[in-house]
Amino acid sequence: MSGQKRTAGVLWASPADRIMLAEARAGAHDSRVHVGVFSRMPGPAPAPDEVRALLADAVDRAPTLTYRITGRGRRAHWEVDPGFDLDRHVVEYRVRPGRSLQQAVMDALRAHPLPREHPLWSVIVLHGHRQDEYALCYRAHHAFQDGMAVARTCEAVFGGAALHRPEPQPAPERPPTRLLLTALRDFGRIAWRPARWLPRATRTGTPTPALHTAVLDADAVRAIAAGTGATPAQIGLAVLAGALRAWQPQHWTGRPARRQRRGLPTLLSMSLRPITDRSALGTRAGLLPVALPCAEPSPLRRLDQVRAHGASARISLHHRAQSYIWRRLPYPLIKAFWTTSARTSPGYLVTTSYMLPPGLRGSAVDTGAVFTVPQLMRGSVGTVQFIVQGAVVTASLLFDPAVPDVDRLPNLLAAALADLHAALPDTATAHGGGLTARPGPARGGGRRSC
Image 1 (tube, rainbow, N blue to C red):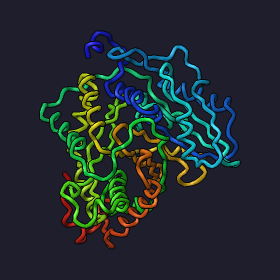
Image 2: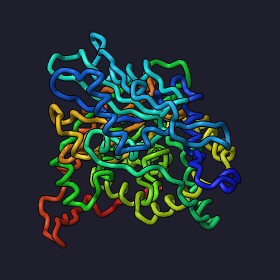
Image 3: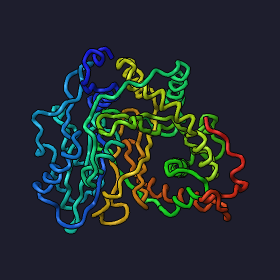
Image 4: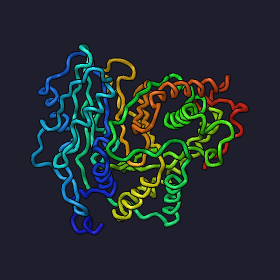
């Protein structure tokens, strides 16, 4: 951008940051573009002074927490908030009778929007649902931080880690035009050629989206990873495909139409943050189009197809193209493409998978006590986040209120994982220090998804 060239050292807001701000303005409520980490803790809720003392120490180790966005349009940039006050970033919320903790988290987000004139984050203390526990939730606006940045910040706030002070990052080099066109063509398949599966997502004036969580069998995930070489993220996508198949069998079983056989177009979040950037400021997330093989009846072939569609060469192509697109293309062009995609899509699904630091679990009540709060973009019917934390794998599901029967999905995810685990070959041989499953007949015919 010309403004970036004229003024050295300024932390200009990227087009991606500005898109997230526009998403908040266009939605029914800005809480739809908040991301966070939620943890149940034992004992009585701490006093606000105790929380402020914790955050004061964290701010010294994570200076990003003092930055706000200011300016408009091309002049939007990040700067230290001259009126930074921790009191603005500590929220106390009493859970209403009859509300689950997941529902209370969404109520608290909606009741306490993040004012743009100050850093776009807060720590929420929820209490009143039980006498022997409370809950902490760190949440941030998606313009301020993406999911990976939130995870790093939680490591600093609750785990004692340190983040770098934000600094301008060098602009990525322009990739070949053919590479950019390939990436854009992949997104076109998401926006204009989706598999029909659910009604169009609602737009504005909707009730609070419902948050659901599912704790997956970590031993089964490890066994599948050892037996197939798949990553937890790939296993999560294959399990999600199996759960969606069981959730909407009328779309995926029998003799589905050709478009259905090609799978469910899905956007998988991936980090575009440079290795040199340890500040956790701004959104640096890209989206990898992936087809979930919901029409495939074999759990192992579903996993094979997910792995083929997420091949490293394809990820590298999108990483290079989107690192340039989200940082260097003109904002009006990106916004037009984003808005058109949101309006024309009849309901795409966003998924992501990342690790949380074990330090967050130091005072956790039990397995699954830590889970995430995903964002819900326009045009999307839902977001599914898988987190791996030590030996625990948790899925968080946030869906548009217009989508029926979402409460069935947590049990269906557990069942799909059990089916995949049961489908592993009985014998495995040691290979290269790990376990490699001997291929059985069910794995031979897997084809690459479109």
